[in-house]
Each structure stands twice: as structure tokens, then as C-alpha cells.
Amino acid sequence: MGVYADIAVAATIVLYLIYYLVVVSALLDRLRATIAGIVAKRMAGVVILGGGSALAAWLFLPFDFAGLGLTPAIPPSTWLWVGGASVVIVIGCIATAHKPENFDVYPEMRVPRWGAGPVTANFVSCSLYMFAYEFLFRGFLLFACLAAMPAVFAIAVNIALYGLAHVPKGPREALGSIPLGVVLCLATIHTGAIWAAFLIHVIMSQLNDYLAVRANPAMRFGFGGAPS
Image 1 (cartoon, rainbow, N blue to C red):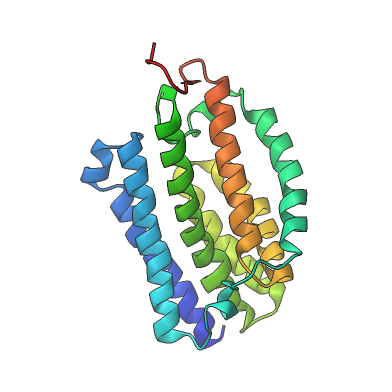
Image 2: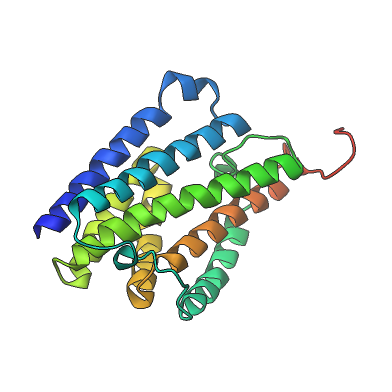
């Protein structure tokens, strides 16, 4: 690999290890699955994964942020990728929403009553986290690798690290990250920006969460009025 790809791979590994150690820290463990805990976890991701990769790019890579997929405008082809992926996502999420094993993963916030507060906190924190996450994997890492190797190898490196990042969530998540990662990489390469990957990831995450809330007998939506 070229020196810039080496830097990006090493930085991605180090940043994710730091993030993982923060996530499993005693402080966050006491707040695990609460609104405060999940928001804190995601904000740690924004700072460590997003901020760390941005700092590494600024210090060590010869690309501006547009060259790492942060284009100031959203390319029109983004919407074709988002629309096509959304059809598959909706079908897949509906098919798995009622499965008990799905309740173990979604939603991360184990809130019995989902009103305006939990929904807003979940959406905003998820969007910020996914932006940082996609910049790390489909921006910083992918574009640095593309500058040093053919696209197929850059995607393979990306998927390998992306899959490893999902191992702590269990084999189902780790295996599922492979086809998703391929799609997100292809969308990024085709559009030249991370926006399609970011939007697809947010849509999938939010749909998984809210279909799980609707299907889980221990949870419900409740906007306005006193909780019952």
C-alpha cells in the first residue's frame, strides 16, 4: 500500500480501538442503554472517530476534505443510490422487525415509552454519529486507499476493517456489515462523496429502531399526555 493508505489504515484501527475502550469504560457501562448513555456513546464517536480522522487527514494526507468525500454539494446521483438502497432496506427491516433477536439489538436506547424526547435524541445523535462514522470509513479510509490501489482492493480493505468494527456486536451484525459495506463503498466511489453512504446508513438505523419499537411488546410510541 502507499504511504497515505498505510496512514489511513493505521489511524482507523487506532481510532476505533480508542473509541471501543471508551464505550466499554465503567462510566458508560453504568449508563448503558439509557438515553444519556447512548447519546454520550455516540458523541464520543463523533469526537474520536470523526474528529480524530479529520485531524489525521489534516496532518498527514495531501487531500482537502472535498477530496475525502466531503463535497460542499450533494451530487445528484446520490439520490439514485439512496432511493434504490431504501427499497431493499425497507423490505429487510420489515422482514426482521418482529424477530426476538432483533429486539436484543434495536433500538439501542431501551426506553419503554418513545415520545418526542427519545425520538429527537435518537435521531440527532444517530445522524451526528453516522456522519463521523461514514467520514472515517467511506471518506478518510476509502479515498486514501483509492489513491494507492485499484478500487476492488480499496473496497476489500474497507470491508475488512468495517467488518472487524462490528464483531463486538455479534456474528449477525459482523456478517451483515459485509454486503452493506460493499454498497456504501460503491455508492461513495460512484458519487465521489460520502453523502449517499451517510443517508443510507441513517435511514437504515432509524427504520430498524422504530420498527423494533413498534414490534416490541415492551415498548410503545407515546406523544403527548401523561405516560401510562
